[in-house]
Length: 398
Image (cartoon, rainbow, N blue to C red):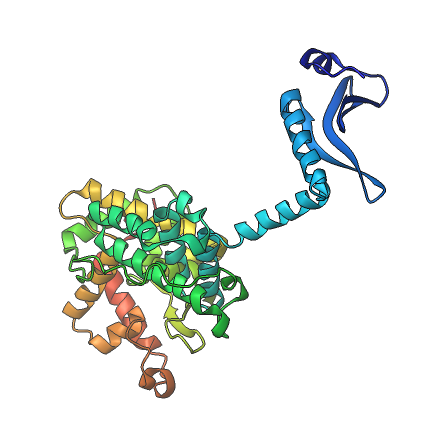
């Protein structure tokens, strides 16, 4: 039988299903379909007295030369007593297994672990991994990752002056690899954190970036705050504008918490899970004034499936507003610091501010003994805060 040529393969057609051969087990089935012919390369062989075939793929996606090289590979497998179909199945299985043990799979597993544990930080961790760990690193087997692979990403942030972000990335990487390393002995670890075959934690020896632990000190003065309010009001109507309005009106609550909050009557409930071994604590904020109007107009809070994306977008917009305003740059975290500073200047105690801003409340006394909900005090502070920023209808509803 004559060998096929590139021209005969291209010209081959049939009115009914036809099988043409190139010899050595390589065939090209031709099937009529909607006025055209579909062609697929197959390798036909006999193993253990059973006739079998495997498919390479369609022509012309795979040329005649490529199909012949592939067929020779299958023949070599048979010469070594290996079934080509079984070899293909095992290769596919190994590829799936490999994809489940990459660095990217480890990082994704860590985020899922945090989410399952009820940790609010899972959104920030996912954001940091998405933005600052390259796809080339994520594609590598987790067991092959070295501290040099990881430090390159951290050093890039340091060179860009993003010291706090660099420290976060180091901390999150260290925690993720440590969980994977010890997952077999940790009953709280999800099963997806096992099987990475780590022998060491590649992030353990990476030093904390110098200057990254400096606590932020930026606060906005009243004039800057008024300008910030005007910029928010000028944003296009939608989820992000509502998010930033509520974040400010609710005394600088963390954006991720606002996005995950639920409405109960005339209050919103944030489940704060900063404690490692305790159930998430309900942080209740009474709604009043403009915040209540926004929630009632929306009819609900936010789509929690978009928490990470909306948090990133909100942070980016605040940075843009900061740039547009000029002066010393600020971020969302600085808005929170501004609120607390101004509430302190109004005479509200640190204990009451802590209750409103939901920080510093994980001690034994607050967790087990102090059951007062502080709703009257929170309402008083929120009313005072809204009056301070002068969030009038003419500004907020445009």
